[in-house]
Image (cartoon, rainbow over all chains, first blue to last red; front, side, top):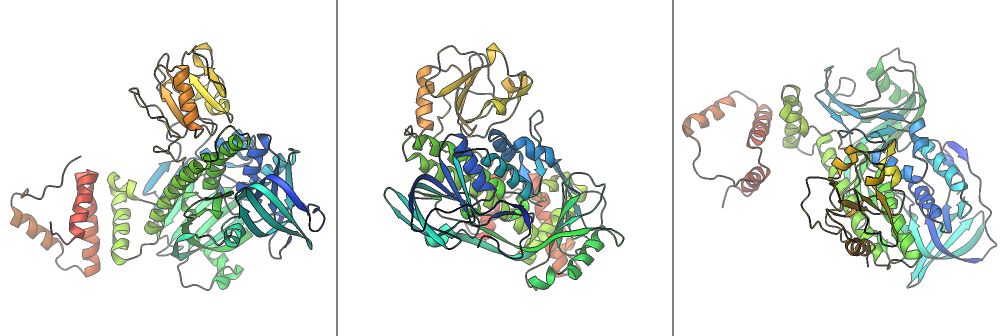
Length: 527
Length: 66
């Protein structure tokens, strides 16, 4: 169904002409799903020069806002893909979150999502998902090697040792594609996962949230504001986020036993908004919906030649902004690995490390989301008493504030135990250990992360031993960098750090040699 | 990291115990639960040692045996 009823259209992208009935095409990479995760995956592999087919059942980008919070790490990834600046230019930048209780005017708790300054990107921007999708779509359309099949739907999947065959339907025409790799980025209700009969285990939280996107003129600061038990939603919580175009996102906690249809009717939503913002507030409805929290993941994300990424593989409650941001982490991890495998430079077993690292990330996201949700929605009298005790004590005592959990927001996840890491053999004064995400720093007039553009890179503070094939060398002793960069990575004279194509640290040495670098490179490529 | 001390460690045990019971005098069950919650959080922060606190939670959960 290319154009379902009831879903507003942001941008018409048309139905791609299907091949003749009964055709069997041969492809290397097919991505299913045209949301932000699928499109970012297509952009990553397309920019690496691969022929990519992306299949998505709708012929338009939908206009309702879903994801709105784009994390610093996602912006770093989107910078590497060349679209980060577009999101930042349009988005609302924020770093500070405030938590209020009851009708008190002063927050009981406040946090800064970017405690380490002198980085290119802020802690977060807020932006409607449809803008991000439009920017990704425009970037994909500029790549002749990415075939965007909008209005096409996958109806069957079979797999053998060499690849995957999918049945595709488009406007009454049925055809097949045989592909070496199938990447399922088709969301929470993944048809690929269903067609393959795979598991999706986890918890549903017995609570609902009314999500209201409205437009209005307000002079409030660009901060995340969260209320426990405010007068305008007694006994429940409320979250307020600013978006571009004078749009605001309000999440009202509404409890479990509700009439979902009645709850989203205008005449029932508007009194809540007026109670919160004042009877005289002028606003326009954009989108109202009900959301139920779930925390789930598949046991494995790699099933032979079918790979799952994003919401199809894992699902979290939204209070940590860990949904779409978690999906970008997946494709960032997967892109370079699949690239090396397709070029014959790394063994297929490298994908097992995608499975490992993406599961570590999903588990951390699920753990944090579950803890936040348990704090927001206590499951017992005692649990509620502890939550209230934290909020009461936090008003006057600093010690209790770190316990206040209105959502632990998405930051990049480290893989300290990843088999791709080369363990330290030297003594380091801090710095960024192997398996960690990168920490940005000034680089001359630019930024470190802009230099780490999708290939293995050795950043050294003086090194003339030669870089192995496949490793780009940036020697800070000949220019670039900054003292902040040297300090952040503890790069004393002669020391060096090897970054993976996804900018994670693979290895570091106080006195590297070409042999050591080569050995770490091979390990990071799964050899 | 410390180890949970299960040897006698409080002087004037009777007095401290009585203070605890007196604090709950006249409270409803709900208010008592709330008081205990605040008290536990204050003590956890004062101890500050994750291993000690987690050992205490586990010991209490086991019903206090071993």
